[in-house]
Image (cartoon, rainbow, N blue to C red; front, side):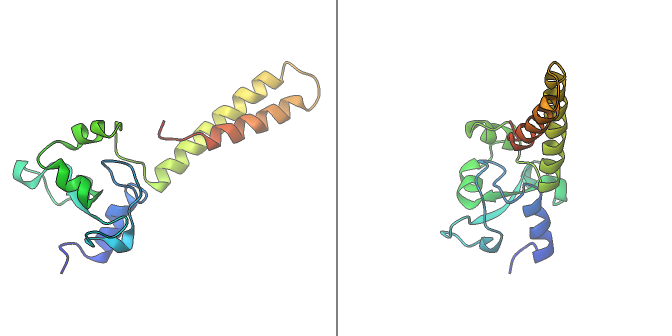
Length: 140
C-alpha cells in the first residue's frame, strides 16, 4: 500500500503539471511507484525527512524514480542544476498565468510598434505580439 492516497498523489503531481521536479520530463500519474514503467515516479521530499523535512505538501514533489534515487542526499536545487534547471516546473495554473502575462506584454509591444503605421497594421502587430507572447515558453 502506498504511503500517499490517490488524492494526495494527484495534488503532488499537479504541482509541476505532470513533470519531474528534478529533470523536467513528463511523468505518468498512473505509473506512481511502478518501477520500470514509462514515466514512473515517486514522491521526493525536497528537504529530506532526515534533515528535518516534513510531509507537508510544500515539501513534496513528483520525481522519476531514477531521478529521485540518483539524487540521494543532494539538495533538490543542486540536482536541478545538474539537469540545467533553476526551479521546479510550474503548475498548469501558474503556467497559464505566465502565458497570459507574456501575451499581454507581447500585444502591447506589437500595438506600440504598430502605432507608427497608419491603418489596421497596429491591430495586426498587436495580435501577432500577443500570439508570440502566449506561445513563448513561460519557464524560460
